[in-house]
Length: 149
Image (cartoon, rainbow, N blue to C red; front, top):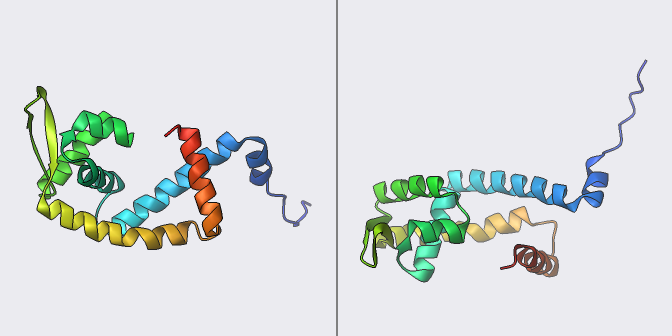
């Protein structure tokens, strides 16, 4: 008859041996948490990032948004379509390159971004609760270094 004792947890050992696997699993878990948070607040993660970038850098092409935010180009089209239908962005032919569209943040989009940004600190505090402020700063620096930002 099999023993009813708890089996040892393997993933902590694997994570120590293979930080790449641990980071992939962590990334997936964080993405699910961010998506759930975004859904509760009515603005998808990709939509939020597009609004945030447009607010920070001004109008730009969907291609630039896709490259900078690391969102697949086909997904970016859908994100911009949804944002435009909601009145948060406006797209028009880029006067510098008629083959592309310039995406511009609207006043309504700016207001929606402000609402979404208001919910971010509590999400980050909850998600990264096991880390103190210094550890969070260190994690941010290390991730940035790995991503070569």
